[in-house]
Length: 272
Image (tube, rainbow, N blue to C red; front, side, top):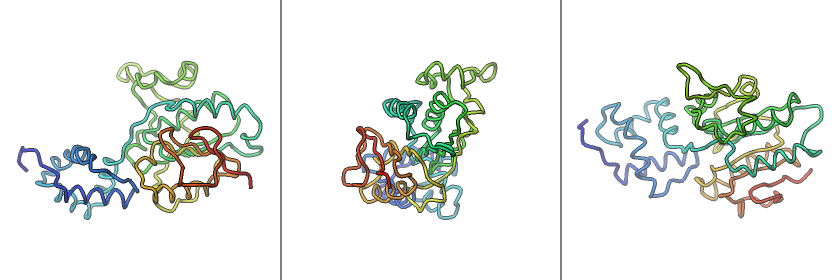
């Protein structure tokens, strides 16, 4: 492969666009062509390939590289306590009768958890409000790469600034020595979260039912039909009376008419 930068042709871009839509349901606009080229260019250099077409053909021969490609092309931007009104709402509901079940753990699903900031934010809140009362979190993502990072629970110290100070002091460890500049979520919190690779664009594995489902900042990448299918799948795992939270930048208009709006971006599944 020459040192000259390789261009991503329209035909090659269309191949990758179709691939990521078929696998993850993500619809890439024409404006995403530079992003695709940028994220895959390193793989071309590592394999000494002359074109993106050569790399695409390589994906048919290697399931591991196909997963790596999917990891690179799925967007994973997130941070702790993103869209804080959702966490204010959850804290408020936890203080009222009805949400906390009797005789079983409170169950929450973070449906597109990325590198873990969302489920850890939920977990820190639950630990703060519920203490030792039983609760559990399922955190899922299509990308194994970000799930591995999430399981480790290690973040840059500067990324912890959005965590309320009391929670930081009680449930996070500050790195020292070789780990200076990093922060670790304490093991007692990490043990309450199960990280699992789940493709929401496929039939869901057996997960049981949940009291709250977070599906935030992922539907913006889906077309209307994919949104309807994904939401229908997830709602089948939400208990009657449970809450479904999406991003403030997203909408369920034309996607689902069974949920009741509680507040903007917060919905409730009617009681059975």
